[in-house]
Length: 169
Image (tube, helix red, strand yellow):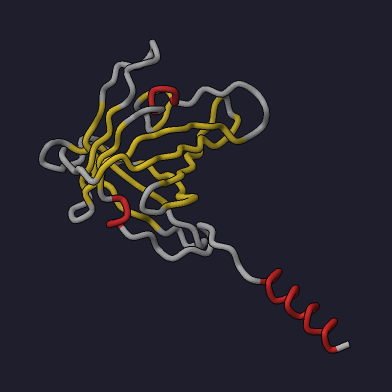
């Protein structure tokens, strides 16, 4: 009887232990992002159908697959360059100023603004962009960008893989 009780308590203890997710994770370290990253996958989450998403008011979502992102943690500067592969993509990019944001619901978001060479915002209205961090470690990051198309909300999930420790803008 004691063995059965011990097994039952062990199973109960392990089944109640928490898992590591963005909703219970500690604040991400900016140093984790230091380096150059590539977007290796983009997927859409929402109702079934065809999606069109212009991400960050910059380019259509296929242009971001294969894009290169550089993050410098000590001053929050960085840049990205989109992929020139698909026909609607020109391979352009922009400098950014980035940081992490905690909305108060236990999650963390990556936020950025477009900036010039002197790290001054280039948008007169001082607008910026945010994406929820689903996962972040030293080699991979997954972000979720909430968008709408023709009034229908869906998420664009971007998977980043670290390609180097290079932080050259």
